[in-house]
Image 1: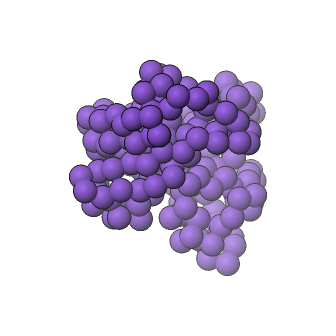
Image 2: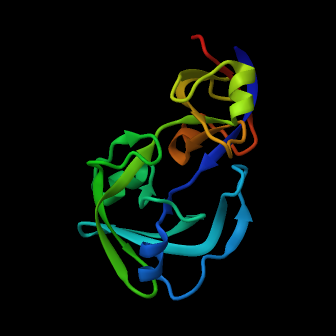
Length: 189
């Protein structure tokens, strides 16, 4: 399989359960803009996070509510916070870095939750079938832009999947990629 997809650059953000959100905010979670992944959206609400004495401000909450609380940051953010979070698939927070999440109404201390999200290519089940890929399969992304290279990414198959490569801001800066740029995705190196 070899095909072309667009790039989606993901800045630091948080996923929250409804219960934790209600400890942080007295208002409803509201839509700022829809994301490509069906049903997901960037909210108007932001939080600050603290690890030890170091803090990052204005991390956007991604809706809808999840069954887990997770903070996705970049390696550069991790340096600022003085932490070494694991590189993980979204939702895999067991044993990750503890964090305090601060909202206008209060704060919540979590024993785990901070990760660096692995690079991944979203697929709907029909796209996965079309391209003959399975969830968690290792894929290779060829970048032919100003800075050329090949990076690994995991296939992420979900019912709301929209075919797109997701990378964090560090990867985007390293390869001079922007939202909407095109890259080649293959199952072979």
